[in-house]
Image: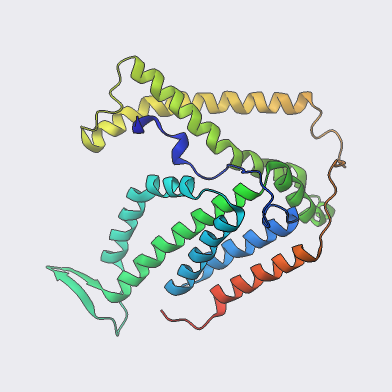
Length: 277
């Protein structure tokens, strides 16, 4: 029943244990690597550089021996939204002086520069989804928590509670699969009561009508879940001790530094290589 597969449509937030080169790297180095990778993909305006970043992201899945199919399902879910952006970009894009019109119908004209701009949006979106999926797949919750806390520790001198900031980021990333699972449960319970979820007819209006009864219980469940998490953290004494000890000790080795240099080199290629488009 594809109408109920909300959990399969989210490929970000899953950790896959493994012993690959990416899994064995220090948590701080992995966070820095993916951070500069995401920043470079976001800032570049070259289509060919974005394609290079997309190739590197796919290579990362191969090196980590992680299935890429969940991330592809995430892209499939967002395809209608991307298609709308693509059409708007083609129609409303301000053409360059030397750009040639590719298609014209009435007052609508599509230029070559608009086509490249629209393709950049699509490739950048796909690359960011793959990079985020790869990052959460090789970074466990514990590693990301400790890595961010150690990287942001200098901010504590300015009075910033970095431990709470890191916990907010963790809950935000790891809560997505739980929300998807809850959406499946609500949709199946409503379908058992007569809601036509998998009819495939009715268009957008019917889909919106079916989504409204789904959003309200999901919103209430999210508030209840947040309250339960807060109570559990309070019962475990979270936040009572300003300095927390760690069972695991992280040490940066030569392979970690080499991995970071590779990340800097990839980001340098994406940002500063000779532009083709």
